[in-house]
Length: 123
Image (cartoon, rainbow, N blue to C red):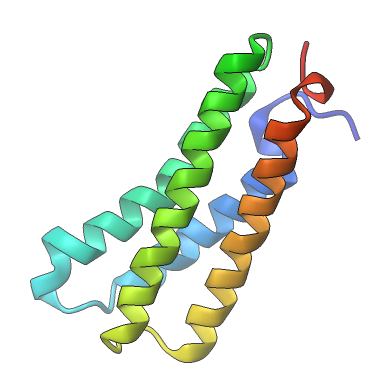
């Protein structure tokens, strides 16, 4: 399959789905978490997608491409931390926590592979 835009990337599709899943789950977080945990987990999960879109548009420049992929990877890892806090405080159940942690492990793995092989993505 020819990849002509960032939305064609499987890793983008995975990250977008995970961010939407987190949004839905975080609707049930307590009101006192609105300006801390809820905002943080939504922001970091969405940022994975945004940084990936930027990386895709900067693939002509390997160093910029890799830097944006690394930003995306960092946001994915940050999201895992917020998922751990969410689970620890009882805001999400064990099944959702485990599923999303694995999803982000897979996302991070795909981002690392892309960053380690920038020449495959150059235009």
